[in-house]
Amino acid sequence: MAKLVITLDGKVLKEVVLSKDRTTLGRRPYNDVVIDNLAVSGEHAVLLRDSGTDAESYTIQDLGSTNGTYLNGAPIKSSPFREGDTVDIGKYSLRLLSDTRQTTFGPSRFGATTGFGNSRFGNSGFSDSRTRAGDAERSYKIRVLSGDAAGREILLSKEQTTFGQRGTLVVSVMHKPRGYELVQVEGEKRAQVNGVSLGLMPVVLRSGDVINLTGIQLQFLQV
Image (cartoon, rainbow, N blue to C red; front, top):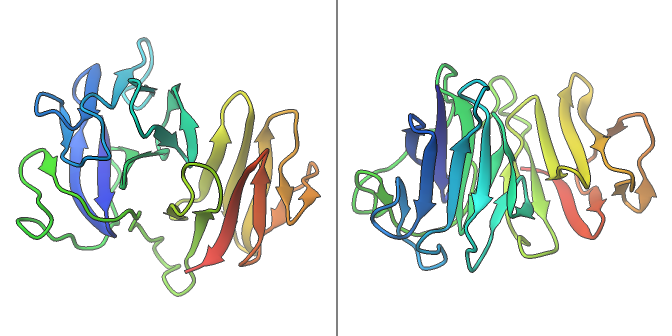
């Protein structure tokens, strides 16, 4: 069974097991996951389990929220939501994981200091605090430089992390023995690294490289 791992300000707030076919996210108290923050709409988004598939295949839909819903750094209205994907709502990061996988987030702080209680949690900053085992000495992140999500940062904690919007342009950042590589996996228009269009072969990323996804700029940085 899948779960949502919710992080805020570098701390894990909660892990929510997705036991329902429809899971609502928003500020109002009747939501399945309540995010008590003014940047979050009353009925912000909904997770729908895809019928005829395994429990880890979902669709995320924005419900006409004021500040938007972001999947892997890109704004969406409705999009597939698969294991390892990250949704940003306000300053919160929600990652979809299999409940059988061990979560490697660091220790979290609960209670009045974070406004956390039951399924409600208060406001602070945004971060994804997971780290890769054996790679703690050299961690990397992606920072969004432009667009509505400018300033957001995503720690690269998996073997593969995708960015962009499915059906338009999608790139993948892959952790390899020689470092992190970038490859385009979807889209007719080509992504660029430091102004140079990607070819068919992966490109090794170096800290400071700027990735352009048809107007949205990301930067690869060492933590």
